[in-house]
Length: 171
Image (cartoon, rainbow, N blue to C red; front, side, top):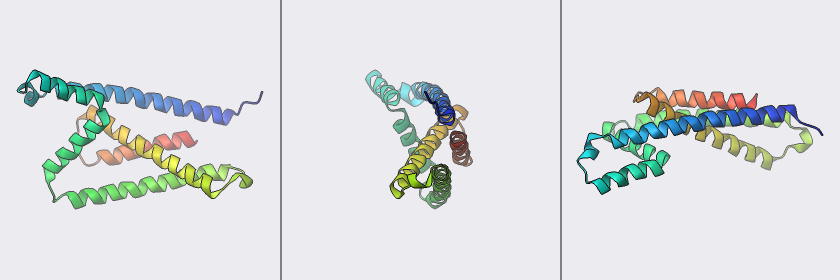
């Protein structure tokens, strides 16, 4: 029986990174729900409303987290920081596309020439991009909840950590 050592090592690396992200998400989720449950504004609401709000935060952690983040950003700076935020997101988006393209190129160059096709390249690129975006979103959520920081370097830190995770997977 033939066992591909490189593929097995890559699969174990992927599983280890996924395990660490899952544990981080669970911890961040529990911290997030406990912060929502302990808010003073929530204490003034009737008991069924409190249960509904905490239950919604428990059931939809990622959607609830990003909805609160977007609302807080909108409340904090209104329309004047929209262009600045879009420039930062555009820069992060371009770097994400460049990282996905570099990962695709790395994977394609390791394949035999007869096994390469445009369809496979597009599929690999989409997979790399999806992994990076999910990784960035999850790492940002973990960092934001655990550090409770609202500074502008946090998205870039999340992007760098997600890029480091991709590099670890590609090695």
